[in-house]
Length: 307
Image 1 (cartoon, rainbow, N blue to C red):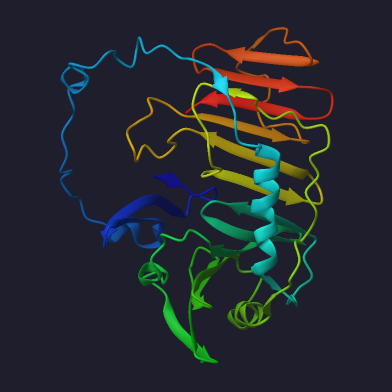
Image 2 (image 1 turned 90 degrees about the horizontal axis):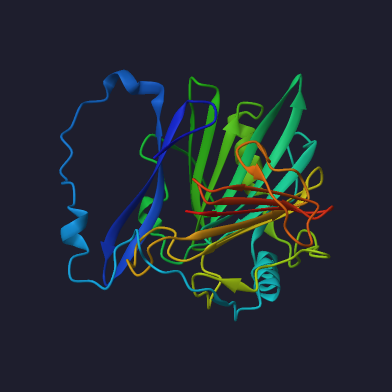
């Protein structure tokens, strides 16, 4: 569970069985009516770790880690994923011209964040769920109201008292959500949705010149299952790759490793780590308690940690 940056919403992961699959989703709860929330007993129990790992060859504390080659071409895998954005939808007109746009692609969703400067910077995000296991039955948030039906598409909208707006709809077999500040009216949100079209091309070419990707890993990686690609004109590209079972759904990994690289300095860079020397890098910081390593090679920042 996570609190939104403005403190007005809670987000949590949920899953439910459907046929022979597990449907994963991220749900949002507005805190606008928090006074009406009720208390509920948690139906769970604390596992005994000694019993849980009894009979195994090792425990999580003494599990031996073996480094092994990364057989997957990470650079090519990211490019192939980014190429898929040419089949996704982009707005073709804006009610107000954004100051800048950030494009983001992950294994779960594709989104555009529009930044509009009006005394303060306001944001509007357009998201398309690309996870093939996502159920369209849960696309529409319960607190939204049907405000328009056009070309067979139902549009659900609500303007919250917290100055946040949200528009949900299903189009071309995909779930769309347009959320953000009240810099746009309800009509503007609808017009933004109506303008969505397939562009037939990627928004911008990936730039991976000079980036160092891992060639060894403590965890096997054969497919790019969990990843994140982000681009904005102000900050350039950043990439995040997870090695291992980040969500803990398979139970065959004791931990995961996250690898992040960007041309922009990471917030809090070098604050919690001890300065060390690493060949090929100008700066390096390591936090032995959190198992975090931060690097800078003169052009790119790198961040690796156990998850």
